[in-house]
Image (cartoon, rainbow, N blue to C red):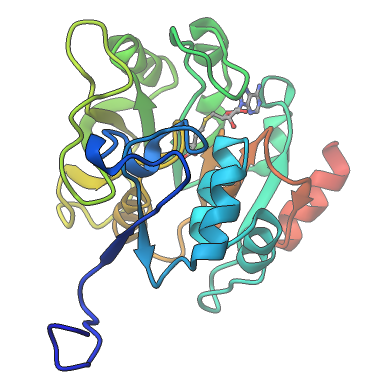
Length: 296
Ligand code: SAH
């Protein structure tokens, strides 16, 4: 407003410093900014987007203990509101609103859900770090009956550095040809490359990798998007939203889309999301509802 003769600037983000009792401006910016785990004690400078998040919501948000809730609050205000909003979202006639099943994937009967044109999996690979959810062994992940979820289609599998080669092997075991990979370069809240990754043993890991596999000869719009994403780091393990755009443009709106090991913020119109941190079951597609009742 000050620089534009009183007219608010609409096409840029604006940030304001969050002053808490423990903030010490002399320390400068927190390296982790919005990804900081220590909101309620960190003396470094943190910012809030204005006016997208009002100061009251932000104050509530920084008191939330869990990273997931923090991420949800950041995006929607609160978790219940997010679930309600997502469940009612229908983008076009051919697409169902977000559907989800809370279950233990290790024990889940995959017959219930049928076949998919595209699958995204972000498995809870074991890493040497305390995480706010259950982790699985490599064998547990490799033994999942992923092969039966697709006759012909595309798979996107997120891997960490340690399991990069194993992920490629699993794709082959599940019946896919490993064809490509997408790199997510992590940036912080103010769009700068992050200086300190939270993982890695020899180098700071500031990127993540999603392997791409193909089974059969799926019809898709190839060569539309690039193999890199530059997006902000949010909650622990949370993947960038840009991946959905890439997949949806590649597969088209009618494609059946499945995400395994998804959380609340992954719920999305046109997708079925499965994970053990989701709020119950929400099925809309008639055939899926019937199968769910018959097999479970
Ligand atoms: N891609 C997600 C992050 C996934 S983290 C994002 O963008 O936020 C892995 C998730 O898998 C966690 O929610 C964890 O609770 C869940 N999970 C771990 N073991 C599971 C199991 N056996 N069945 C279902 N979900 C499981």
